[in-house]
Length: 213
Image (tube, rainbow, N blue to C red; front, side, top):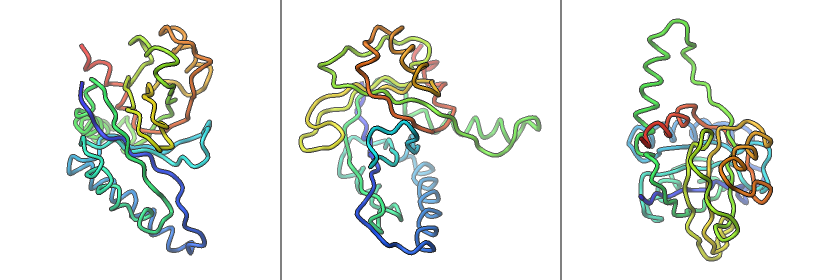
C-alpha cells in the first residue's frame, strides 16, 4: 500500500472576475497541469460531471506525494486558484494501485495516437463514475471487471470531503449510474448505499487493473 495526496478542487469565493481574466486563468490552468504532469508531480486529473452530489465540487488531482504541504503547494500554482475561483482540500489517498505508472501509460497512448493514421491525434477522455462511502458502512468492493481504482481516503477532521471518517474511494468504468451500481453489486457491495459522482479523465486509467497481476 502507498499513500498519495488527492486534492479536491472546489468552487472558491471569488465573484465578479472579468470574463477575459477568467479565460486567461483557465488557459493557464491546463498549461500548469501539463507542467506538473511532465515534472512527475501530477498523476491523475479530471473534472466532475453530472451527477455531482456536491455542487461545490469542480474536479480533483492526485499528486505523487504523501505530504499535504507539498500537495497544497502544487495546487497553489493554479491560476484560477490564485484568483479565488477555486479552493483546494488535500486528503490522504491510500492504495496499492500502480498510480505512479499513469504518466508512462499516457505517453504510450500518445505515441500510439501519433503513429497510427487511423487514430485521431487529438486526446479524447472518457466518463467514469467515482463511488464513495464511509468505510464503516460497507466493505470495499472485490476487484472485478469495471473496478478501475480501489483506494481509501483517510478521514480528516473538519474536512468537507471526509468529515473525519475513512471512506472507500472507487473509480468505476461506467458512464451511467445503472452500470456503476451493477458493478458495485457484482463486487459484493450494497450499491444503493454508495454515493456516485460523474467524472471525466483519461482512458488510460482502464489499463491500471492489468498492472495488478
